[in-house]
Length: 212
Image 1: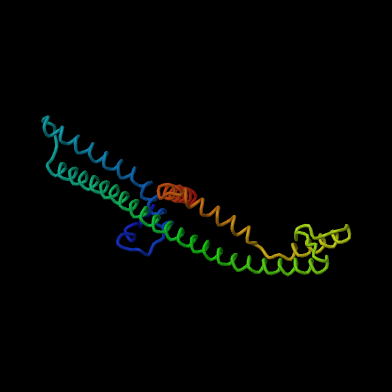
Image 2: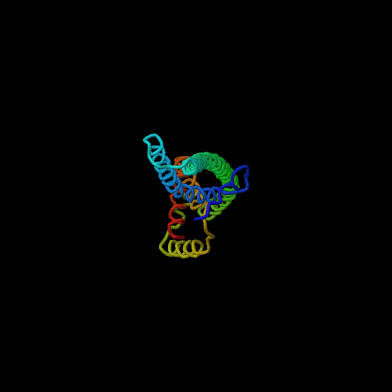
């Protein structure tokens, strides 16, 4: 498995998903670094036992074992510290992304509020015009708009026209947009950096497992 996480340090150009993928790869590789360090340590201890116990050994063999152990231990430290640093960087990126998404959602809410305000004014004007017509037709005995129909024929015509208009409605409607935005904001409200990072890492680990 090829590790390629060093490019992520000192750069703001990478997205959370890509960083999570590299963290997942590094996390998977750390046990191998730990195993290599353990094996190198065991070999170093074996030769040192021979040294202090009067066994047959050479200084060159001991130096080689010590060097291999030092390198393996430092590789493990580098891998573990890189994992922690990258995880911290991922949390920072996720926090920024979540804040941006919340700001966008709030801007959408304000824009929708403005849109519905204009729409409500139009509805009020049309309702007033309809009520005025009903008053003119009924001689001043106006009925509420929602009970405009006075006989089955008018009710059937109303229902047919309402059905036709409903079929012509564009989607999403105001209610659908409002519901979706509310659900989005509710998800953002309960979403934390920790849960987002965990989900990103879980997905990256799944992708890593599939790619092997």
